[in-house]
Image (cartoon, rainbow, N blue to C red):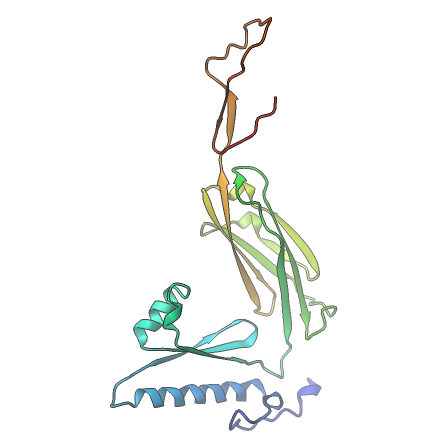
Length: 241
């Protein structure tokens, strides 16, 4: 595009430079050189490795450089970042984008969470908004559609898959697919340009049944006060007669 014709394609030599005038490829090369230099310094201690540095990609062009004591700590943190948070000794983050390419922003959020706890088999709706737009102008809508996929307890539910048009809200009924006592729901929203966001939601479901007690005789005639035995199973409930 014409507005990117003047971007510098020279090597980036340090943090003091204005990276905004360099293209994305040169920014990536600089970060790779930085990583290589870090690794050389920490691995050259008596010929033994005394640390572990890894590069991780993030959303929207973010790159994370994370430092661990050794490979075992890195692998343990990757398996469970929350439980092993203290194994992450340090972190640097950079935003890298190709200045010569189109930049689309994915904007999505949940506007109504499903009810929890909920009665098993009842309707239980999740609502979210979706937008994808060019640059920093939310009104410059993406001309391509996005997608939404839903998994419940690790299984993708094809019937809940959606094609998304920018600038709209969408509602999904999770009720028929919540079969466990504690359900793990994953909603993944993506645009057509590689941007995606994942929401993890926990929904508890309970079963509720109600009926007359086994000793109740529906055919008996009653001319005075009498008792109506009611049985209720599942959760605490209020019965209206």
